[in-house]
Image 1: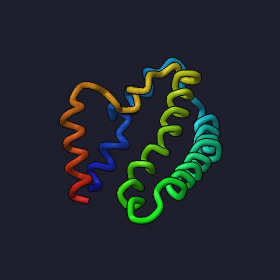
Image 2: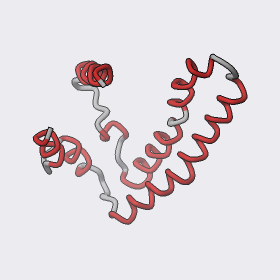
Image 3: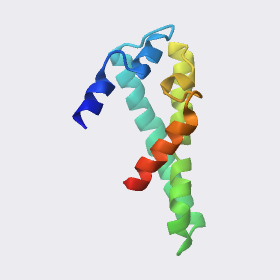
Image 4: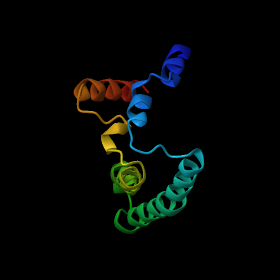
Length: 118
């Protein structure tokens, strides 16, 4: 476990390499401001809307089945806000967050296996 954490923090990590290829590197203050903006103006209202939809449309036993689906859709505005910031500020494509096509099926299967194990 410790080796995985050390490998993740290695400056030559693929994610860090992709981030350095952006046209403009954000400052630490800008990154903190974006996180707070997304938290306050996207995540909290999005989750409130999700809970409202759950209570309005799914009353009774169907909430347990629909809950994870609707809950995950509630995170869509976060991805949209992050994409807008990456495009506008860093001039960086969304795939550079690690959503690369190369090796995607293998990575998806590995992630699914980890999820099942947990």
